[in-house]
Length: 475
Image (cartoon, rainbow, N blue to C red):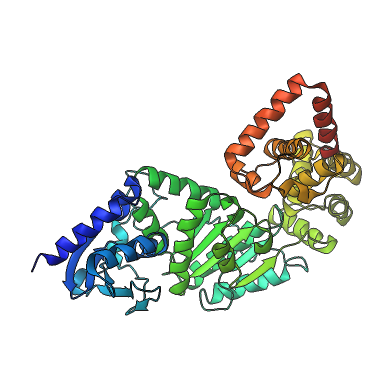
C-alpha cells in the first residue's frame, strides 16, 4: 500500500503521455514527483508556482479526466510547491477538486524568494563568467525628474510617475502605463521613476528593460533550457520598468511568460511601469487577458510639447551645456521643430556643432539656414496606421478592408503593399506588422514583401502603383 501513490501516478502518466506532445510531456510531467495518496486525494510535488499555474492553464482538462479514470469520481489533486522551503520552512499546498473548476488556495500562490535563493538564480543582465550579486537597474543617470520638463502635454503622466516613485506598489497607479509617439519622453519619465525609487528606497530592486531585450533574453533562456531561471529572476524585481511593450505584438510565448511575471509581481504589491506607442485599447496582436491587466492601474499619455514647453526644453539644454543663445534663436528653433523632444534637441546639437566646426557665431541667419535644411530633409516618422491609410486611399478602399478575411486579389495586393512599406519604412518587427495588418503572422509579412519585390520586377502596372504610393509616403 505504501507504493500505491506511485502506482496511481504512473497509470495517470501512461494516459497523459498518449494525449500530449512528447516535448510537453518531458517539460511539464516528467519533473513531477508523486508524494502520497489519501483515499482519492493524490498529492504531487512541482518545482515552482509558475509550474503549477502552467499546469492549471494548459493541462487542467487532461489531468481532471485522467484522475477520474484512475481514481474514480470525486478524485482530487493536491500540489506541493516547495520553493523557499530551505531553513525548515514548510512547503505550502494548493488543491482543487477535479470534478469541477473551483480552486481552494490554502496559502497565497506567489512565493517571495529568499536572499540565498536570489544569488543562485541566473541574472540575464550579467555577462557570463562575471559574478555580480547586485542587479544593475539599467538606468541612465541623466534621466531624472529634475531634467524632465513638465508641461500641459505631460503633466498627468509626470505627476502620476512622481507619486509612484514616492510609494512604489502602494498607489492605485499599478501598473502605470505611459503611452505616446516616439521622442516625447516616455523612456525618460519611466527611468526617472526608477532613479527616484533607488534614491528613496535603496534596498528595492529596480530594473529597466526594453521589450526587445526581454524577448531576446526569453529566446535565449528557452534555447538553453533556463526558462525557470529567467522567470524567477524577473519575479524577484520590486519595480519593473518595461519599455515599448507594443513590441510583444504577435509573440504569444513571450506574452504568456510576461503574463505570469505580471501576475506574480502585482499580487505581491510590486510596481510595474510600462510604456507603449498606443493605449491598451489600440494595441493589436496582444492577448486580451494581458491587455485587461494593463488597464488595472493608470494609463497616461504624453503629447507633442507646446511652444512654451519646447522653449523651456531648449533653455535647460543650453544652460546645462554652458552655452548662451539669444531668445530669438531659441524661438526660431522652437517654432520650426515641433514634432518631438528628440528632434528638438537634435536640431540644437546640430546648430552648436556647425558653429564650433566652422567657428561662426550663432546668429538668426545661421539658425534659419540650418533649421530650414533640417526640417526639409527630415523624414516623417511613419506609423503602420498612416501607411495603411495612404495605401487604402490610393486604391479607394476603407482601411478596415485590410483586416477582412478575404482572398480578393485587389485587397490581398493592397495588404501586401501596406506590409511591404511598413517593413521598409518603419522599425516595427514582422510580428508587429502582421498583427496590425490583417492579424497575420510574421511569415505572411515576409511572403508579402517577397511578392511585392517580385511583382515590381515583372509587372509594369504594379511597379507604378508602388512608386506612386512611395512618393505619397515620402511627401
